[in-house]
Length: 61
Image 1 (cartoon, rainbow, N blue to C red):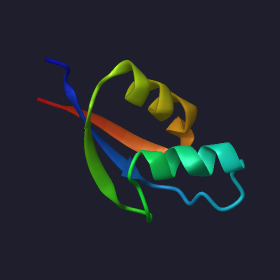
Image 2 (image 1 turned 60 degrees about the vertical axis):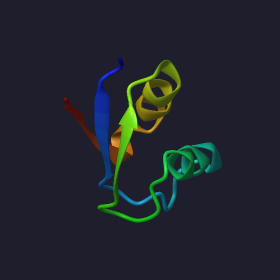
Image 3 (image 1 turned 45 degrees about the horizontal axis):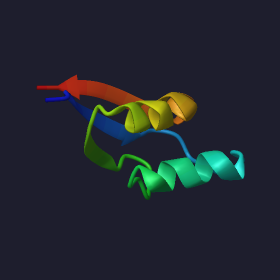
Image 4 (image 1 turned 90 degrees about the vertical axis):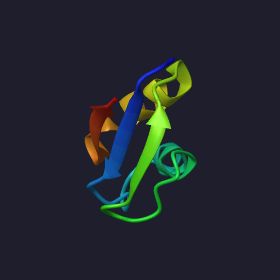
């Protein structure tokens, strides 16, 4: 069973590349300080790596 990640948007997407904005939206983050929990699958890890400069990521459980 993959570990879970707690992903928090800590920086605005204003001024980011359109692809990065779509990635943040695909993760389910809508506004600053929004938090989602996702399983650490290769697809999610790739998205997190792409926009890591906007996120705060913690591993839970």
